[in-house]
Amino acid sequence: MTYPVCPECKSQNTYHDSIQFVCPDCAYEWNGKETAEEEALIVKDSNGNLLSDGDDVLLIKDLKLKGSSEVLKKGSKFKGIRLVQGDHNVDCGKIMLKSEFLKKA
Image 1 (cartoon, one colour):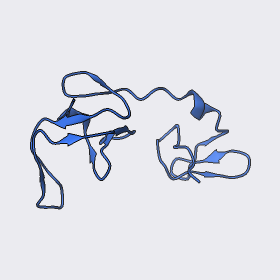
Image 2: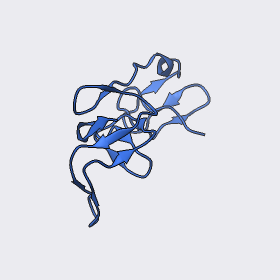
Image 3: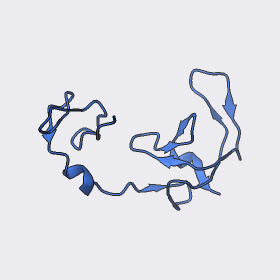
Image 4: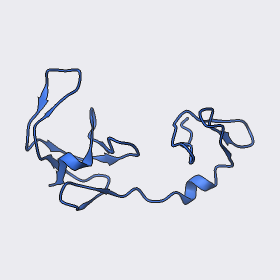
């Protein structure tokens, strides 16, 4: 079972204590109804186009994968992306990328 992220610090390390949700990282407590009112995630590609879940995107430059000798080549296509919170805000399946290095296909 997955619990909602903390609305205060965006930590995923939360738990439910039978009455409310609690974040042990920042000690914030909430009843869970606030998560339904969360803002929609707005992510734009390198050209300023809005991205949404399920879009196909292309890589606009070569990127070296950290901790590896592998390089993602310019023009690589990723199908069916998923948008997430955080610095690397596009989930391409096995890797997470920043939207500033992508353009909508």
